[in-house]
View (cartoon, rainbow, N blue to C red):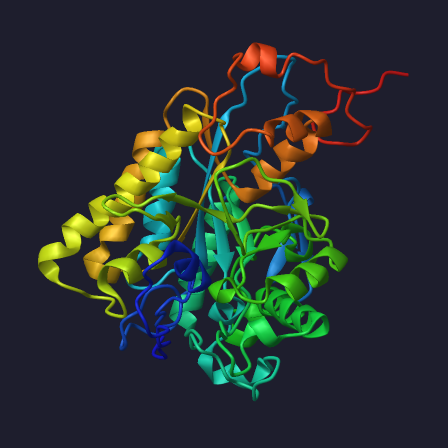
Length: 427
């Protein structure tokens, strides 16, 4: 993956400005800069055995229906007076597997710590560079992408990781395609219809990777992407307004393209607003967005590889900021903590180390659930709306003064029929 994307100029000196730059990865394609000259095409490893009766190929066989996703817990309603669990969501923008093997590494980290995560796949990472002209980005010429495309080796490796991640209970979302930011045709200028077209193309590249690579005998992805895709994060957190309108019409359930404080989420434009949050930034008087890119820009500016003598400190700073945000919620209002990352080795990989240490530190604590956005949305849908409204009255880090038993003492109304977590109706 040879193409590179430039980082927006200018160091961020305040959290509000930092938020506007979030997600502008310096990608070298897939997810962090695959080396040039890697070996040629390779076969995708076969998927774990699934009964043939449960497999229904879709289209050219790039995807398939294989039944309900494994390892998804059934969400349950809070009982009267019950303290909410502490949810933590780790998510990855532009997820793909390259020579750094970060996708496969964090799959292992996730499994070892009883966690599931959300992987936002960039559609062009399923499209070989030789077929680049198949991508027709809004407001740009065919074949244009600010993060490049992939090669057959990278697509094969990415497909393998997507398959295993889904079978382990992780979520596959989308980070769309060309990652266009800024004023020159950036996603912030796209109309609702242009967003719909971009989403349709992202789905299409996933549904046709076999045709586009020629790997027609490879095993399919074990899910129907039309049904799997329920949420996204926009490039650089731009274009959220029109994207959300398009997403609502297309049946999406959540968006994570904004900036929130650490409070309980509500709905916006009919979608759960599960945006990343501001957490303490050690050594500073302002707070920082829960994304590796934003910590980097506030530490080394536009340099993705800054002063080597400071890199370990920068990684510790991100880790400690995320942990401070976690404990503020865990010991306070129990609002879900939303964290965003990229499979990049910025500043010597210290942000990857920081995230891994946070996973290991928090995901094994009592009452903590490290989940995907899908699982969080399922849980929110299962709750009594009045209970969620009560939770939203708590400020950042604010624990209920009378205690949880008194604060949530009211008996919630029965869940509507068909809502996840609703009791079965006996006839």
